[in-house]
Image (cartoon, rainbow, N blue to C red; front, top):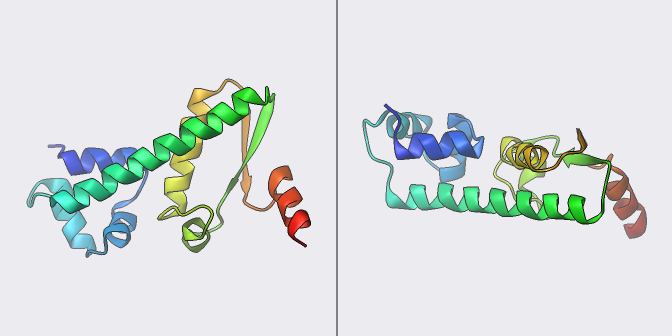
Length: 132
C-alpha cells in the first residue's frame, strides 16, 4: 500500500536514508511512515511538499533559461556529494534531490542535456574565474 508520504518521497528522489537525514529522524521512522505503520506527522509532510515545490520551481526556471537562450545543448553541474549539494547557492538536502531537478529539466526541454561534475561547466568555470 502506498502512503501519501511514500508517494511524495518517491517523487522527491530522496532515498529513505536521505529522508531520515532531511527530517532529522531515524531511518526506522521513515520506514514506518512509508509502510503506513505510523502516519507521517504534518510537519514532515509539509517539509517534503516544500522540497517538491522548490524542485519544481528550480526545474521550471532552469528550463525557461535554457529555452530563452535558445541553447542546442546544456551542461548541468551536479554536486559531487551531499555536503556540496547542501551549500549555498544550491541548498538541496542531498545530491539526489538536485539530480531530480535535472531529470525534470531533461523532460521539459528538447535539447541534449549533459550532466557533469559541478564546477566543470562553462558557466561555473566563468564564475570561478570572475571571483579570482
